[in-house]
Amino acid sequence: MANHEARPQIESVDLLLAFSRTKDGVKNRKCIRTIIRDYDLDLAVLEAKLKLMGGTWRIHKTVNSRDTEKARKWIIHKLIDNPEFAGCVDSLWRTALLQPEHVYGEKKFMFDIDTKDGEILGMIINKIKEKGTIKEIIETPAGVHIITNKFNTQDVCQIPVVSLIRDGYVFIKKIEYKGDK
Image 1 (cartoon, helix red, strand yellow):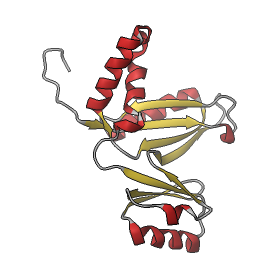
Image 2 (cartoon, rainbow, N blue to C red):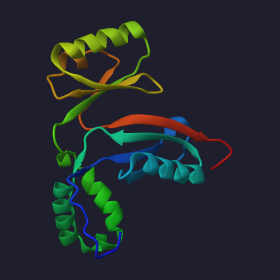
Image 3 (cartoon, rainbow, N blue to C red):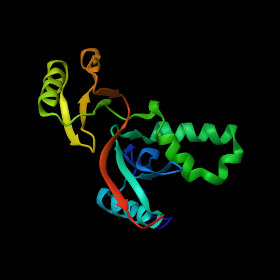
Image 4 (tube, rainbow, N blue to C red):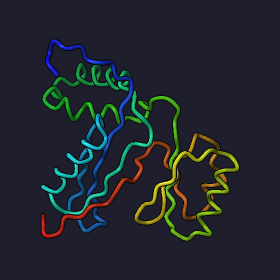
């Protein structure tokens, strides 16, 4: 886009995050963050970067969209208070977007369920449906992520294989580049 062209005001964005984790055999944990403008293209570009870096990566997407106006105000204050951050504005912008208080719109919860047992999953899903609304169920390497509306989760969180993540990252895929770094 040329400098003289009008830029549309974007109220919210989502982010892709790629994690290398020690439990996947990585010595130093890493996180790559990308703002989504075109999901398919941004995912392909992120995967190409990860291939160059090599190793095992888990790609996630933010469960809740991020409010760009709240993030803009946060970054302005951060730069006024810390002018030494001026050289890393791109990274600071992604950090601003990921602040928990910068959720845009209706907040969603994510349940991380660490089992693939159909009977247990069915019981958990029924328990969630008693009090909340399931928006999406995503398979993960160890079980599922269940995205819901915000509700009183006390009963569901008593189940040993369930973890509630109030503002987390939903699993997209796990990728491995063997023979690389």
